[in-house]
Length: 575
Image (cartoon, rainbow, N blue to C red; front, side):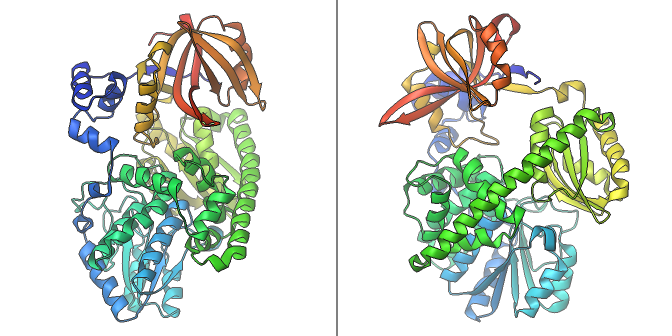
């Protein structure tokens, strides 16, 4: 296990003091806001108290007016509309909210979500042909299509109008569709460029509700949009924060339609206060498991279910999702073990800056998760390829200092297709070219990545003594939630701390302990740190601890506990 380097974030102390006075904040919380670029009291106030009023005008998105006009005309003329989604959580939740909105507006609407292994990724000409054969006059894509030029041309040939809504990076030329709604369009001046696919779909729903005089419907869509937004790991600032924070509150409060209720039940979250952790590790994996292991329609049908008389069908769908998630976990563990072995035993793979591993018949539904876990384990960009019938299809995950999409663009002559973001992408190539591709992508990496870039780093927001951990500080940290990309959970450092109880292994993977500094004692957990037991036991008298604060509720009592990010014997550390 490579210990990370601790990087103490700088802060403008003057701005922090001013902000604390202006908003009557604890100085620690003011400091955290300033480090997040929120030194202006008005911006900080909006961040702490987001509301639906903070959502931008959806008509500011390029082509939104064209799209709304065409959809309202289709509803008026009773034309058949199809929503073309994607098989991940972002795509499923996008499909659900747009279909539900169109149904409420009286549309004749259906949906189509491609199956990963049968249909491949994205908007394809074959899908347009199928929908045309079903009598569809208008197709609206969600969370896909920005690079679907062939599908757009086929739609035009067949006389099918196509509206694309997406958030992935566009090509140099947009597809020839009737409307293309994507805040990342180079000619789009929309202020919030980092919406998830479901965020873009929500903007279309917002515009349609406004046109129909039904803006009061919007909160009902926000909670499903929050699931997709949090699952897609977009920066939780701006509109994404509004969607996530308000959506989580609505998910926690209820009431819910029968399908969403069943999903929360099977995830063990009925009646609980739901946060970003619950979405990321309990709800989203179950929704994702449908698209990864079988058909995404299981999750879509579940979330669309409204009728209380469907109780038995809904229960079966929820149990099916749960079962697929268990199967996904088993496949993932098996492939991760094999991939790690390749990295550790094959110098042609493991000695490179970008890890490119391939396996015959690896389940394509889980290779993206495996790539993420390789990044976590080795702190290097990772590309995991599943080889079948002479074709290698892969998922890529990166580190902050490496633009994966740009690297793939430079390797484009070797690839059959590719697309995605700077930090996550997908690709396909001929299996016989895997070695050539590994060399090519690493040649790009060697130009841009140095040893420092491949060193794991732990961001420390501030030093905080145990005496400084007050109820106000803990509540203030909670007010910054939900945490995720763009708004990481604050990490503090306390020096010369003693372990007075433990460390004790928990489920052979984690460590529990009690920590003491300056006479104050806190319970703490270090997740996935069991291999450090002996080191911590040896140095328990004087450790420097990096930690985050958690509020634990038990029997109506709230206490502050610490989640340990790292521990080192005291003389090792210079922050």
